[in-house]
Length: 217
Image 1 (tube, helix red, strand yellow):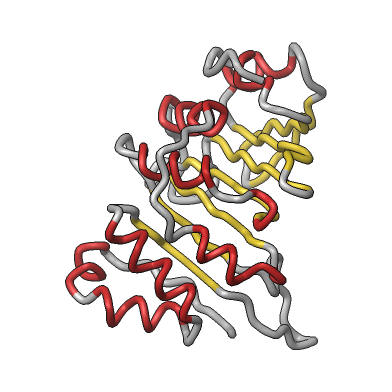
Image 2 (tube, one colour; image 1 turned 90 degrees about the vertical axis):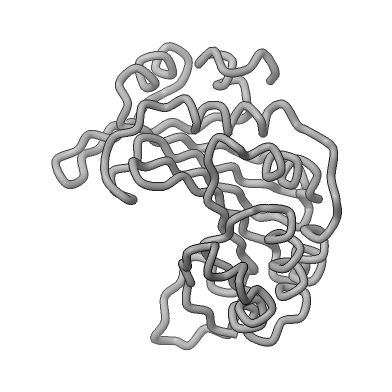
C-alpha cells in the first residue's frame, strides 16, 4: 500500500469521518478503525500509512512500516495516555517535532505487527507515563522559533528495541536547551540553511531532569 500524507482541516474530516477514514486507510481495515477511534477521542491526525511495497527507484525512510502522525496543542492529555499505554514492542520509534506553526508526534510501527500497531490504538487508556508527559511538557514549554518545519526549535526521537528505550536523540536550535545538555552530554553542532543545530544522543530520559522538566529517569 502506498500512501500520500493527507493534511486536512479536522473539522472537514470529522464532518465526513467515515468517508475520510476509508480514503486514508487505503483498504487496511485496522487503520480505518484506528482513525475512527482516534478521531472520536478528539485526537487530530496529520498523516498515516499501513506500509507498502518499495520499488527499486523509490526511497523512503520508513518504507514498509505502519505510521501514524498527530498534531497537538496544550490539550494533549488523551494523546499522552495513548502513547503511554501502547505496547512498545509494536513500535520502532517515536518522534516529536516542534516548529513555529505546528507541533507533531509520529509513531512508526513494526511492519510484521501492523495489525497489532493499529489495533492497540483502539483501546481506551488511563495510564500515564511521566516520562512521556515530560516530553510533551518540553514541547509545550519551548519558546517557538522558525517556520513550519525547518528550522524546528526542538526535535526528539526515541528508538525502541524489544519494547524498551534503545536510545534517544535530541536536536535543537535553542541555545538555552543546548547549554544545559552540554553539561552532561556530548554535543554535535552543524549548520543548515544558515541555522546552527545542536544534536545530542542519550540513553534514557535523564535529560528531562537536567532540563527541569521531570525528576524521573
